[in-house]
Length: 247
Ligand code: HEC
Ligand code: HEC
Image 1 (cartoon, rainbow, N blue to C red):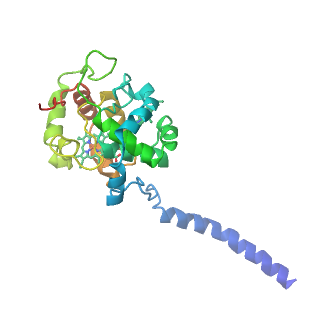
Image 2: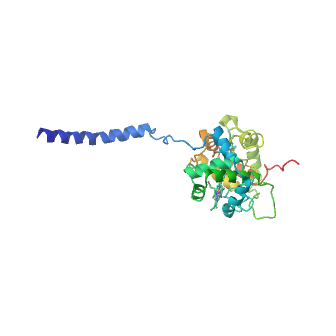
């Protein structure tokens, strides 16, 4: 008899603990804060850098046939929402493919494509696309350069690209995306499609894209107004930042 009452009491205690455990779990994850998670499984260790740079461009060329349908025959897509891959920085290609594969960067189209690539194949594709020239060619079907929607946008874009905005802690885009400097994994934007850039800036500022290391790009995009995002996308997408290669 005593034993039965004891076991009933035991269950009540467990049931009573449930809200406490739930509350503790919520507190543990920071309450209303997003739960702590690593943004990317890629870290720029010597080993990763060696692997990402080890590709064979000829193998990459053959594999690139899988990508042409969307990214275009020479890495210039005819759809402005799909990124151009011509001359893309090797580390960017490598990291983004890894992030699609691990689900750290979401894309219904790219996740299954990246999922079937081996590490070797990712490196081969990076080696190939890095060599494809990004010289604008008006005779094919590429969507780049786009016609700028409002020329006065350059007045907003250029100071942000060349100087940034110290007041808001925004460094100049060109210090990381070139031509002045490049940080690891930051692509050149000089021949990127404007609509793709705009979509990425919106995804980064809204945290639906959250695969950038140290929240670097999310915090910059989060500081930009809608008009500034549009101006930067228009400026890059119209080819104004493109500089022909020196002979
Ligand atoms: C069915 C269409 C489709 C195919 C095929 C495709 N992609 Fe993509 N890819 C996309 C779209 C759409 C995006 C942009 C995703 C987004 O908006 O975040 C993208 C994004 C990317 C990015 C990110 C670029 C950047 O600057 O961050 C890389 C790298 C990439 N694709 C590589 C490849 C490679 C390599 C292949 C071939 C093995 C390939 N893609 C095949 C549709 C495709
Ligand atoms: C401190 C360095 C830094 C600065 C400054 C910076 N970026 Fe970035 N940006 C990065 C890095 C690194 C990435 C790659 C993030 C990742 O790993 O996914 C990135 C990614 C991006 C992307 C996505 C590119 C793609 O192909 O998917 C866009 C668009 C972008 N940045 C625009 C800008 C603009 C516009 C500015 C200036 C207002 C800017 N960035 C300033 C470092 C920087």
